[in-house]
Image (cartoon, rainbow, N blue to C red):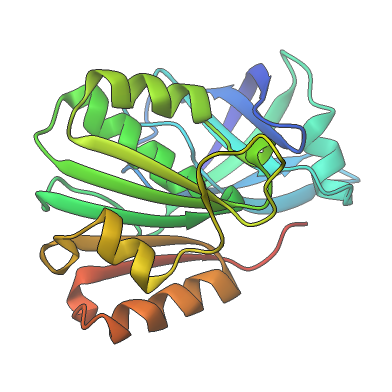
Length: 232
């Protein structure tokens, strides 16, 4: 379905990542983890791109979150002001959560965190009894999106654990370093064989994580994946 929505707010998550919040049409039905097509600009200069919805169905708005790359769509999205109108088409996607699992491990890189934020927020708001471990990889410590929000959830929910790893850390970083590895999973998720894995990130990262999980003998029916094929 095609909807018209209005910009409610914009939030700078990191130096390169921006969230835009839109009004949520009354008839819009969303499952956590889905995506929409967003069209911005005038009728003679429209730009469209599919973006994962980073908000949860429990929230009274629709939020998309994007890395700012300097490409035309990215610039158009960043220039939106409160009250501006956009067209939305969707939602789409099967990278969703329907309360069917009791133990989850999420593997994410960079902006791939967006559908996982939707799922995490939904589980937390609904107070669903599920054990979640999130391994989140970024280049720099100031690239971590939703860091404060995840820390607040983790402080209140003992069944949610986020583990950040940085591939190009600064001198003050004291956490894990390097890409997500089999040893990292074994150490920090010792019951990994009992969990359903959600992988979300750039294509190369998702492919490498899928291969890694196969090496760890995780059955394919315990792996769900979402690939972010571009950053424009």
